[in-house]
Image 1 (cartoon, rainbow, N blue to C red):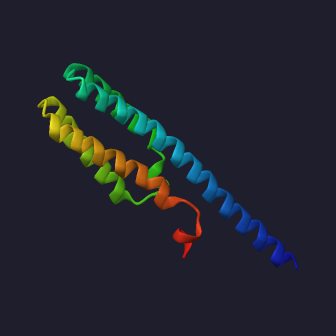
Image 2: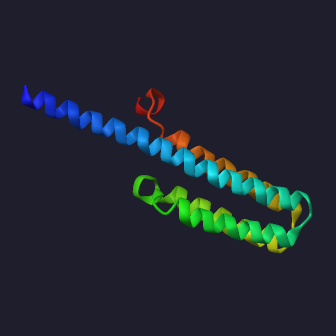
Image 3: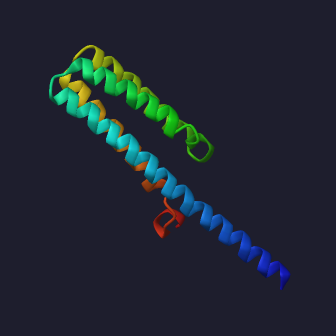
Length: 126
C-alpha cells in the first residue's frame, strides 16, 4: 500500500512539473513573440536604427527568458533559434526588408512551436 502511495505522489509530481513547465514556456514564448512583433513593426515603418535597437532588446530577452530552456528542451532547437537570430541580425544590419520580415516570421514560429511541442496532453504522450 505504501508503494502505491509513493508511486501516486511521484506521478503527481511529474505531471505537476509538466504543467508548470508548459506554463513557464508559454509565458516566455509570449514575451519573446511580443518583442519580435516590436522588431517587425520597426522594420515595416522603415526605421532601421530603431529595428537594430529592438533586435538588441530581443537578443537580451532571449538570453534572459530562455537561459533555463536547455535543461528541458532539445539543444538542436535552441541552436536553430540562435542561428535564426544571427541571420536576422545580419538582414537588419543590411536593411533587407523582405529577408528580415521572413526571418522574423520563421523565428516567431519556432518560438511559438516550443510550448506546443512540450505541452502535457494526450497527443504528445501517445
